[in-house]
Image 1 (cartoon, rainbow, N blue to C red):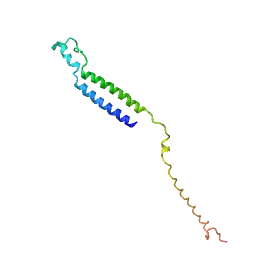
Image 2: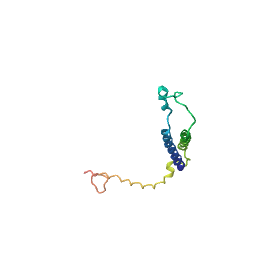
Image 3: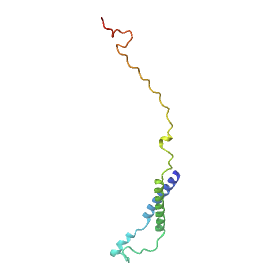
Length: 122
């Protein structure tokens, strides 16, 4: 699955760069607007449209490729993986640490054997 994402992404980037290059190479229709205001003999505002040449056709083909790869990337990005369990299922169980020994309570002064603190003089 990861290989398909890489391939589609590479085609997408190449198509985007090729579209940018082809658009920059084409002669814009707006260049003939100046001719419409007295300096040229253009018949319409944006000049004659004419038939599509190689650059415009290849730009259209690359635009279709770009849109298709965009849809493919969206599909690959939203496709959910198969649920195989939780993340904690993949973690091996750690051995439990032994419990720390609980210290015995400190003896009171009267509890100490041999102590004469509990004896009251008579």
